[in-house]
Length: 108
Image (cartoon, rainbow, N blue to C red; front, side):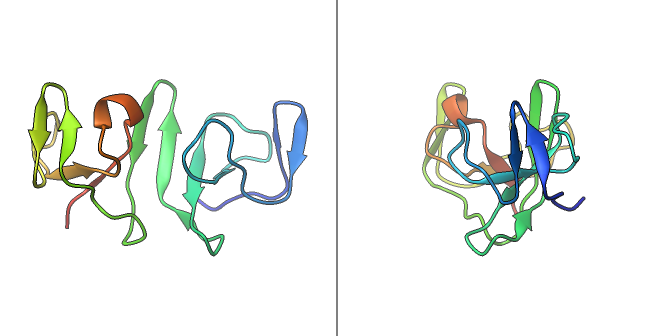
């Protein structure tokens, strides 16, 4: 999906990407925020991601880089891993602490 501008979030109306309790700017995929969003790049182009209720699934393009090493569960990873992925695909964290931030992408 594409970013929708303006969008309503809480008590505000926004005409650009916002940064509320997030490491990166994001935008809504609905005119009135309903839990579906995308990260925005520095240039304002949204990165592919979707928020589905409690689970965050982030699928990104080349804008976001893997961070190594990263901490996942009780292990430190120095490369992409299949651990924890239901489909057996390799993924990596976009921050050093996946346990805290829960931001990731599939590896190429």
